Image 1 (tube, one colour):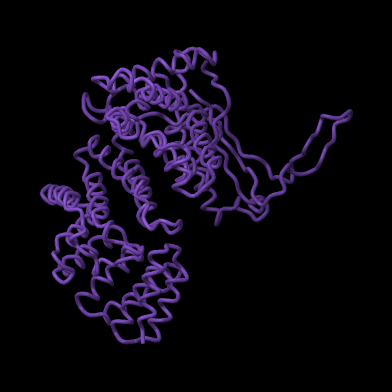
Image 2 (tube, rainbow over the protein chains, first blue to last red; image 1 turned 60 degrees about the vertical axis):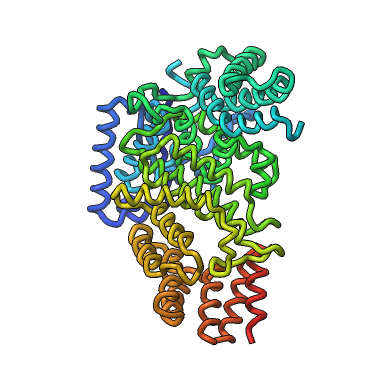
Amino acid sequence: MTQYLMAVHGPEEIYTTGHGGYADEAEMERAFAQTGAFNKKLQDEGYWVFAGGLEAPSTATVVDGQGDQPVYTDGPYLETKEHIGGFWVIEAPDADVALALAAEASRACMGTVEVRPFQGDPAE
Amino acid sequence: MTNSPTHEAITRAHHEEWARVVASLASRFGDLDVAEDAAADAFVAAVEAWPRTGTPPNPGGWLTTTATRKALDRIRREGKRDAKHRAAEMIRDDTPHTPTGPLTDDRLRLLFTCCHPALATEARVALTLRLVGGLTVPEIARAFLVQETTMAQRITRAKAKIKKARIPYRVPGPDDIGARLAGVLAVVYLVFNEGYLSGTGDEPVRRDLTLEAIRLGRLLRALLPDDGEVAGLLALMLLTEARSAARFSATGELVTLVEQDRGGWDRDLIAEGHRLVRERLASGIRPGRYQILAAINAVHTDAGSARDTDWSQIAALYEQLYAVSPSPVVALNRAVARAELDGADVGLAEVDRLVGTLDRYHAFHATRADLLRRLGRSVQAREAYDRAIELTQNPGERAYLTRRRDQLA
């Protein structure tokens, strides 16, 4: 089994313009309901490791602890238009299963999903 | 030893056995790198041994045994991990989808892995040519006009992704096999077209690529003999390749289908292509894109002269093709058939409707130029030829279009 990160990216505005970047209240609620159902499926079928949505990138702090004193910088690490907004960590036997789950995840949350394998093999 | 019997035996074995050796080693060791390197080692060993010992009675068996030994040597020498551990690295599904038969052939697993949708198209093409086709990295780099190091990196990166992301070594299940097979066929057709239509480079047709694509098509046909689109793609490539010798003049100028010397067409390839098309027609199963394209080419190659071409059938087939694959390029070809059937003015009216989507496509302007010329509208024809020449890199096509333009009054 391999663990995969399934990350959802989106523009920062989704946190400021209301409805979480969805067209309206109803669509946002639909996405939440679908994502909840998908999460339940992951748990029921044994793929679930962890998942969650993140607060806005403006709440992030970059920390560099390599010097004598840690340096704290307000804001996200990357200056970019799109930020990670939430993610799942799943455990799947191979890429075909992971990609099929990512397609479901994408449909559920109505966004595109990046899939990346974790290093190492926790099963061994 | 360039033309010695042993050399021929090695070349033949390379064509016939390379994919089998790589596939069976990938299956056994669960690692494409090991499989590729050991297969290459085994062929080097054959080049050394066979001239002395003679060609072994079962070259494929000899190569697989030698490659397996080389793989074990290599794993031991590199002292990484034992073979058993390695075997766990690549995911494979050992439960056969059918009890016996071609779906369990390791070469099919190899093809589906090389053409996995999680890999970029250019990576799929490169991996397929290297691991299934057995082309060397320099050969593939030359074919796609990129630096050898770039191509080597592309292949290395793709193999690393397969390993790290756990892209499985497996024939997809019944729910996915249709879409995944379409992906494999697309890679093969891309290789063929890269050879046949190569927009760049000095040679108008790169037969190393067209012949390699046909070899891959034959392999697929052997592995999936009942699939209509597999048969269709092979037929399409055979019927296209059959005309390639007549497609360029002695001076390297493009010769259009209408003007080609049909005596220069390869009758064996045509007969083989026609057999496949007839087989699909007899099946009564609704054809997909490749089968319809093959049928169109069958109609063309069936005509003794350009004048005898059954244009009504070709127009009907393009209509059918447009129903399954409604692209502007198909609409352009349909317009060409209509021009033959109903007149150049009717064809031109249809072509003109496509300007929005095809304005950057040289064949659009070449088609328009030809129709305008036939309608006696020389000034507009000249402009269209200019635009077509500007948009094509292929030297043979440029030569043809230039001559046509300069013939205008």
